[in-house]
Length: 338
Image (tube, rainbow, N blue to C red; front, side, top):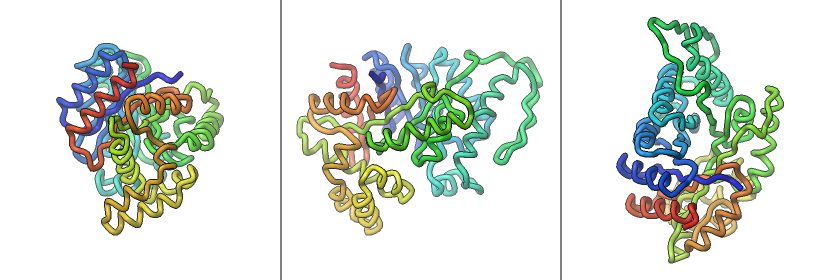
């Protein structure tokens, strides 16, 4: 059975702390945070580390672009120390548009190759106490020598997970990462037919054991005694995620090419209601979980075999911050068996 956690994105730092502390107190195995164009995962992780005692604290994800390897390595090193060795550093690149428009990346091509260069480099930086780090690669160059005494990190190896949507990015996790952070729109079919084989293929290329790569699912869940209200919240979030063309091949592989096309058209027309309506019942039930507490419990149990760790993730698109917080706290109760 997969371990369980919860993910929080919306709200202020105080809300993030409340969610992380509640997840820790409920006995969930992990609390995850993410970032967007108005939120830092690194700051959130530091706050979570200071306000939890036993659960893992992870980024799902922090952007690997826009930060130098040294800054990223030192941020992770510090948070791992604050948490007493409980950090999971989850990294992703975002879409090409996000890399260019948000992070000023001039070469957004080959994001998988970028991560495959970055992940081993971070691990080398964490061993600076053993000697200089010299690197000259496609995306990064470094000539790092300790100018004073460098203490070893709290742990010899901080786990690094990478995110992926398409087959090649998922393969990266098999090649170099300790885990894969799955996108919230992954269906059971996609995990079975694409994700697991791609991890195995990547692991084979670098002589690794694919079973050592933890597959982390981000399961969209909405809990409400009003089942239809819960389903609408979930449909809105699925429509938001399906709007970028970059996710089209993944949705097509899950059997939802028609829905994705209708959602993209409605998005282009600026018709939010049509976007939500375009999410079919089949698409909604294959990807997320919505309904009463008992229905959500059953849905979580149904999806659990897909993953090694399952993080419960509230929709937020079209929802108030208060409703997102309420739903996330309810997910903690449901996920912990309350």
